[in-house]
Picture 1 (cartoon, rainbow, N blue to C red):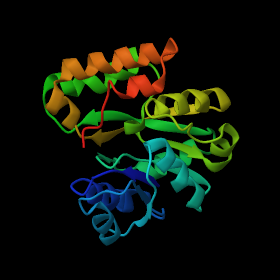
Picture 2 (picture 1 turned 135 degrees about the vertical axis):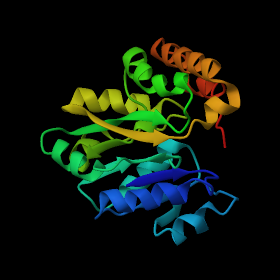
Picture 3 (picture 1 turned 120 degrees about the vertical axis):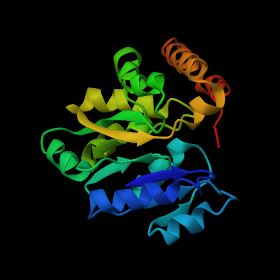
Picture 4 (picture 1 turned 90 degrees about the vertical axis):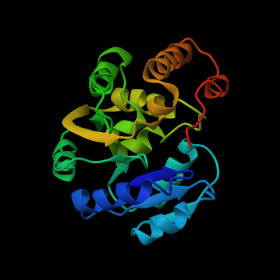
Length: 217
């Protein structure tokens, strides 16, 4: 499993610990972009292997994939936790599919956020990185990993993954932090996500789009 981080000292330990409970035996690789808040130390204490790679999330995930030893890869955001049964469900899915992802819920009880995960799947289309995308090593190599985009790298990866192999959306839900929604407002965040996706589809440069969706860290 590969976790890209940038100043995630407050979240990464929980992601690692729940992964160890639900995916054993899996190696956990944290790829840190020179955090200055102790992320590396927290991740190492939690039992992860940490490598330092500056750059975008796409660069980090490819770097983690290069050093990973398994036949399957799982890409997990540091503020996301896996559900019970995740390991068994993934192994079963990868017997017939080249990759997949989970459904998503937020760690916030507001009705609008409880509904948002399903609305995202229904109206935004392809999955995103906070849904814990997983893929066989063979298919990852076949499609060339993540393209080095500053934004929409997960959207792009999921599209290419679906074209290259069977893809499954598991009926299990990861839980991810709603910190962007809490900080900037759910409707504003959702509108920005829709706008960025459609602008990307119409060929707007990812470098320009990245300025519309700065990191929350």
